[in-house]
Length: 340
Image (cartoon, rainbow, N blue to C red; front, side, top):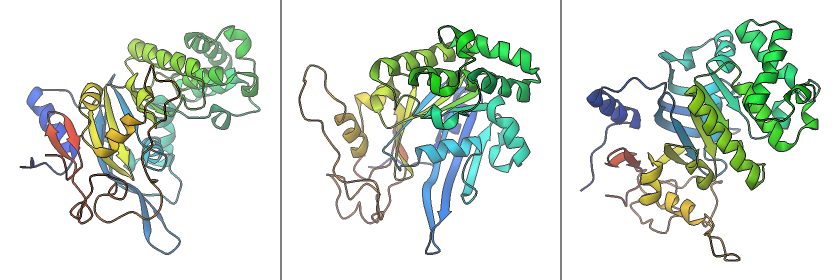
């Protein structure tokens, strides 16, 4: 027998919070839908009615293939969606709905309350502006510092993210730094005003494995020091597992599984999550073929379950109705007709 579920994860979590007396989460996303007008006049949904929350000091990992809606979700939290985007639902942050903010209020929110670390800092940073000046600009705008004091603080921030010779590096331009140093400088900029939420959109993808590990260790260190909540976005489950308390698996704009890191790896329930875990290389087996999930996420969505055209378990029932996200174990949610 299937377990009946409330309308959204947010409602389930609200019941848990009330029962345990837990504090209101820092971020609560409720039924967020993001769509763009298509050329033929129809709306193309890239994120479909997703709900989740992040507590203060908690790290949530968001995983899925390119095109699943991870980045659009993160841009919505920062008010950085393209102008054509049509947004429904609510994004509650520290007691206010961000979807109701004016352009001026969004500018105040970004950098002060929430900050973002992008995948490629060379495209996110100003190439003709010194690294120290870029960090100082955030402090001048949000903290009211003078340019001189802001630059001095920028040097301290570069030191805090373990950049060697921070005084000299603050004078450099982005192209003069290595990829790892640029990403550290982006993190320093993001944390300049001690935001409550840090959104990291695949911040280690372009880095080699050694530097990836250093960046993850740095983010964990800074989270412990400042109690910053983190939404860490990646296509790599192994990377996310190093930093996240909970993991949200997205596919084709929807949440298909949502659980603690331990539960997700010990008992992955959705066939897509199981496939993602199979793609991880196994230690001690060099040269072995890597598993790949058949098909791609692009193209026309199939009827019913959005994963049905790639799922080895799909049957006629899966292609008729889209499965609801429901709680099948304590704090473990899945959207699959095959899971009881």
